[in-house]
Image (tube, rainbow over all chains, first blue to last red; front, top):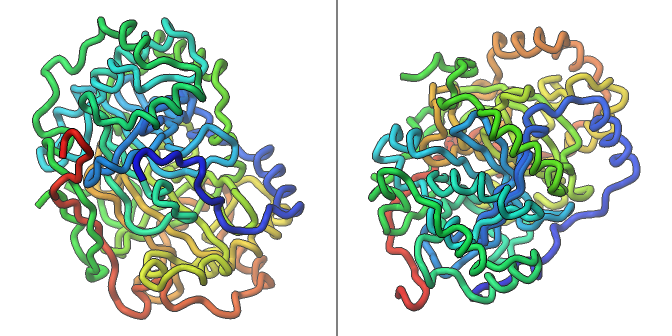
Length: 251
Length: 242
């Protein structure tokens, strides 16, 4: 299953949309305001986690599962800014109209990351390696424009949750949410996954690496608790009374 | 620590905290938006406002805003926000499936899902600003569906940033813990100048599903909710790290 290309996965089960349904959607889409969604402005593609823009930006990248580095996913992020220091992203498995919404990510500056409780920090990952390595990119945006933004992203931390394990072949979003991690060193990313993305998007990670050599990561260095402190993280479902305190984290 | 239970979190200026957008960033974002095709997010064609309850603490109830993308006749995927204006914070994701699809799920999976019939028939689920007549066919369809909703940002307890593991959410139901607090409903109705009660009357003719799978709305039969814990574990590595 190494580096399986998720575009070979089965379709979502179900009948095609009926005309009546499509008509309702045209009406609602015309009448309603779409405030938070209109903000999506960036598409980031990380070879693992791609950031989606609310969504004014598309970012491509890659994520791996918090408990299993051998399972890696191409992730298309569509991101929007809440303010200069905070982005929220929808994550899809492709940049196409039929893409499956597989997760979400929050991206914060180092300043905001440092305000998080220590028990929370392990759920967040650093972006320095994948930005500087060229693995995180903005499809369609010219290099210099991308880099003006990505030099900021290199200093940020992200919290990524996936709900749909498309790499397992799940045709529906089954099971419990997964905490995802990002690339932090050389050799983690499957070559075939990388090459596949490079080819489809007409990019070269190696070339970008040279262009991004000037970038720096968080001012205080990558926090030792980030990236699950170098360990693995798994999510476990617990049955509880309906009147309990919230789920425990890292206890 | 927490905001009052059962109420939407304070809509302060500083949630999340952070500096206001710089002109430079705004220009950059606009530029990206013009250059990039944003196809997946453009599929969201409906805005729905409703309410949800935390499955592990059902007295905590929130107003929610779904931006719905229909993938096919049996499946929708939704980005969920705390409000419908441009400051809306992304608080989770919900998936919606037809009853046909739901019946194919294993029972252990079905426990994580909730039914929509009551929520729709009671007028709690609304499509703001869209005439009832226009959405009626969609409501008839949705009344038979099931949803799975993970909340990743618990604003109602005062979190200024998204903390902790995701929480499983449940839908309003016409029994004890599943009833939405009237104050919450009133606040929403006032905002949109609507009446959930009036909608309930208008929707009387929407057919009840013949049967709602008892694995859904798990708490009703079993008095139990679900929580997610995040635990350290050995990371399964790939060569050359293994």
